[in-house]
Image (cartoon, rainbow, N blue to C red; front, side, top):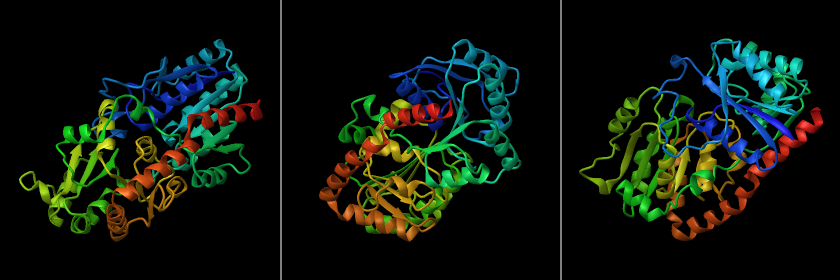
Length: 388
C-alpha cells in the first residue's frame, strides 16, 4: 500500500514529533510511505519554553520532505501535488491542536480533489487541555473535511463523536516508546552514577511542564513522601513552559527543595530544560517510579516511555490514563488533585521492596505487548480499506 503521513519530525522537538517519526518507521516495514513535515510549524509566541527545535545529537530520523509552512497557505498545494505524484492510496494527517484546523480542512479538500484517496486524522488530542479561542469552530472545520479518525482513548472517542456523530473511527492505544530504551545500553547503576545517585529512592516526573500536567500536586505531596520514604528524591525534569521558579518557590515554602549540602534527606529536584533523545534513557533507567499527577489527559507518551524501561507509574484517574495503567499491577491510579493519595501510593510501592518492584516489572513486560506499533499499523490498514 502507498501511504502518506503528514506531521512533525526532527528537528521539531517533543513527543508528537517522536511519535510521528516512529509511526513512519513502523509503517515502512510493510508499506511505501511518503513522509511530509514542516518547514515552519508555530509562531514562537504559541510555543513557550525553550523553543520548537531539538538539540538532539541522536535523533529519531526517517526520510522526509519539509514542505509545509503554516504561514504560507500555498504550501498545502505543494503537499497535495506530491501526494498525487506518489499515487498515494491513503493519507494520515496529525491532529494536535485547533491551530491547524483551517490547514487540515483545506489540505483534505485538495487531496480529495487532486488525488481522490481517503484522509485519516490521527488524533492525539481531540480537545485542548486548556480552553482556547475559536477551538470549537476550527476543530469542527477540520473534522468535517476528513474521512476517518484514529484515537487513543475512550475519552477522545467520546469527544470526537460529539463533534461528528457517526464518524468512522478506530481506537488504538498509544504505542510504547521502546526506541528510547533500545538506542543505548542503559543500566540502572551507570545511569544513577551519571546523576550522582547511590541507593536513594528516586521518583521521576518527566516531560513538558504545563498547568494541566499538575506538577504542583506532586510537589504538594513531597513533605509526606519525604516523611514516608526516607531519602526519597523527587526529580522534576522537563521543559517548563512558564519557567521553573513557581515550583522552586513552592518546594522551598514546603521545606522540601533538595539541598546539595544535605543530600541524604532527599527532596524535590528541579531540572529545567528540554532533554534530548540521548539523555532520556538515563532518567528512566535511574528512577524507581514515574509519577503523572495530571489534572486532565487523553493519553500519555510518558507512560509509554516508562513502559519501554519496565518502570511502573502512578497516574491520575483522568482521560485514558487508567486504561493503560493496571492499578496495583503496572502501577497505581489515584484521584486527580490529591497529594495525599499520591504520597500513599508512592509509600506503598517502596514499602513493597524488591519483590514488588520485580513483580510489577514482569507485569509491565507482559502488558506492554498490547501497545506494540504493529497494532497501529494494522489499525491504519483496516481503516484505509474501509474508507476506499
